[in-house]
Amino acid sequence: MTSGRPVLFIGMDGVEPELIRCWMRDGSLPSLARLCREGVSGDVETLPGMGDGAVWPTLVTGVTPARHGRYFRRQLHERSYRKQVFDVDTDLRYPAFWQTLSDAGRRVAVLDLPYSPSTDSLNGPCLIDWYIHDRYGPMRGHPKEFVDDVRERFGDDPIGGNSDRVGKDGDSISWLLDKLIERIRQKQELVAEVISGNSWDFAATAFTEAHDIGHVAWHLHDPRHRRFDAAWLEKHGDPLKAVYAAKDAAIGKLVACADPEAAVIVFIGLGMGPNYTANQILPAILDRLDGNRAPVSSGIAKRLRSRRFPAAVIRAAGLADRCLLAYKRSRRRYFALGHNENSGAIRINLKGREPSGQVAPSEYDAVCDELSEAMMELVNPATGIPVVSRVVRVARELQGERLDAMPDLFVVWNRQSPFEAVESPRVGRIEHALPWGRTGDHSPNAMLIARCAGVTAGELRTKPRVVDVAPTIAALLGVPLPGLDGRPIKEIASTGS
Image (cartoon, rainbow, N blue to C red; front, side, top):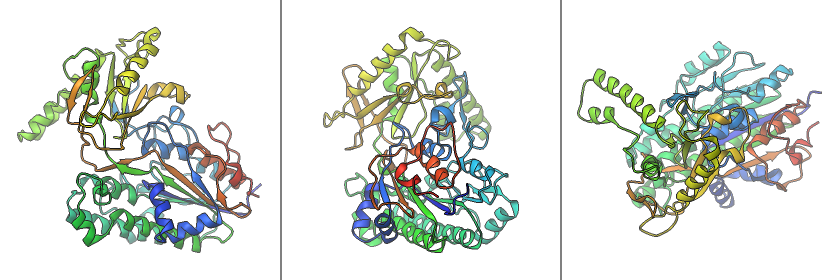
């Protein structure tokens, strides 16, 4: 049965729920505050140890990374020690839930959600990688005429989908802030046209500008950050608050022009906080735990680049680096994988799974226990405070056909205070525990706001999971989504007709 009430989904990517609640209280975010007063809201359980690039594909598919396959942009190539870029268009193992909605006859409009697959078979417009943080490629979607019209009228992303290229100085941040606020305005204008000028059952969009500004300008928001600039803040104001306020205004306009009977669901997260991490030195930590062997990474290309060698020589050196890295990994019991700076990722070199496995399956649990204990011993030598808050044993948290593609352990860094070195009896002292450039990075926090006819306003009585969002929306539209890891949130889905 087709629902008589459409669903408008709005994502607020990279937004910290604690700041949302603070700024709703002081009146800075009136649109979200009104939605909270009129609907239900509460925290959302996210994925242990994982970052934003795992959460959004999970929300989109309704299954965990152990089934859809993505936990990070660069992952191990199957049965190898080499990394490859995960392509959401071709490598995601489960379809986006809106594809099922469309196949069931619902009219959909999917307008620029993070880490989402492109499709040309939707019953409505689809736009991918337009104004998105960390996009996969050029803007694309369906129908072609719609995408071409967006490009002609609004242009492409002024920051090229990569805010990390922007400097961290005050002038660069001011330039970026202006561009991001204009991006919000333009996306709101486009989405408003689509949802007010057409008949639809499900419309979705996301604003990712807080993700960009949070990564590169957290130090201009947080007075406790070691790079905080009080003079800049006094002159320009809080850059995060400016972006949050622009998003709030855009959401208010979208809700106002949507079908008045529409259910409105806002997903907020992953959150953002200071970027204190030891990911850069995790390989050195593992080297010492595995017998003080030579470092896994060689960095030949990096050294040649600093000495201005010809590009062809640097490319050849890069290939040599990758081959050497794969070889050295094959000789270890375990090694570090690339991951978001919120946590380090560790892979056990397991016999029968890896091409040159060094750890027998009978030893697997003992090695994981050994590593977990060693990581929990690490402290900041300046304060004695532990630098690890938790070690996640992935196989105990998730199950699925793509579990073998995941890291075995996530080492979640303690971000209560900064640290620049780590120390323990097992590894000694290792310096240079610093981020590679971002001053802000993700917290595990997320939040959901839902305003639907028939819902009792207030706090959610139970804490939903990210995987529950897709089946909740589908239930409101009367479309079953069997076989997912999530289930409809009763307080919201029971209001569907």
